[in-house]
Length: 62
Image (cartoon, rainbow, N blue to C red; front, side):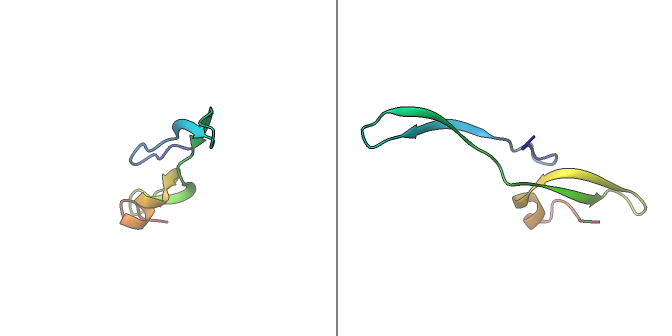
């Protein structure tokens, strides 16, 4: 569920690499919060928004 409703930022996949260079799968989850967002003057909606969108002001909290 870690996907931003504003920018679409989601999980990234890659490898853990040990000292002996053996690889195993890993995942980087985006920092997504459940936030009440102001859509219009009278409407609020609950969305999943990443913290970079919250900090940049792309979304206004209700």
